[in-house]
Length: 277
Image (cartoon, rainbow, N blue to C red; front, side):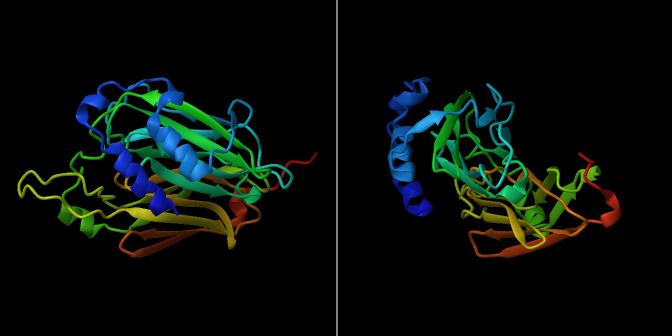
C-alpha cells in the first residue's frame, strides 16, 4: 500500500517550478498533505497533538541531507493505552511518506530520533495513532533544500566495503522494567536515485534501507518501514524495556532484498533491579 501511495504522491510532487515558489507555510493548505491525508489515513480526523506527541526539528537545517528529527511521546506505553504507530511525513519530498514506525507496550516509550533528507522548504509532520484508533498530528515548517539530490558523503567503493555493518548500543544505566534508550546505526548509502555523479553525469540506481525490525527477547520493540528520505547511514534512537539481561536484536532489509542482522547481549549484571515501591 505504501508503494502505491508514494507513487501517487510523487506525481503530485512533480509540479511546475513556478508553483513551488509560491509555497504557503500554512500547514493546512498543503496540497500534498491533503492527498496524504486522504490516501494514507482515509481522511481520519486529526486530533491536537499536545497531549500525545511532540516533534523536534530545526527551523533552518545546516545540512539538508542530514536533518535531525525527534518525535517525543507524551504518554507512557501501557497495556491499556499506548501509541501503536507513528508516521513521519515530509510534504515536499519526492516520497512524502518518509517512515512508518510501529511500537508496542514493550517499547516503554514511543519515541524515535533519526536524520532525514529534505529536498525543499516544507512542512515535516508526525502523526501518531493510539491503540483506540485516534490520530494526533503535529507539523513544523523546515527551511532546507537539495537534500534528496545531494551527492553521497562517501564514495561508492567505500560505501560498498562497509555495506550492512550495524551496531546496537544501549544506555549503561539499565533498570529492569523501566524504558531504556537504545541506538541502531546502519552503514548503508541509502541512495535516493536522484543524485547525479558529477564525473559520469549519470544517476546511481536507488538503493536504500526499506525495513528495520528491532526486538528484545523475541518480542517486537520497534518496526520501521522507511525509504530514501532517511539519510545516508541510517541512525535510529528508540526505547525498549529491559528485564534481567536478555538480547536486543536488529534486522534490516533494503530495497534490493539484502538482509543484515546484529544482536547485543545484555549482561544481567548491568541491569539493576526495579526500585521498590
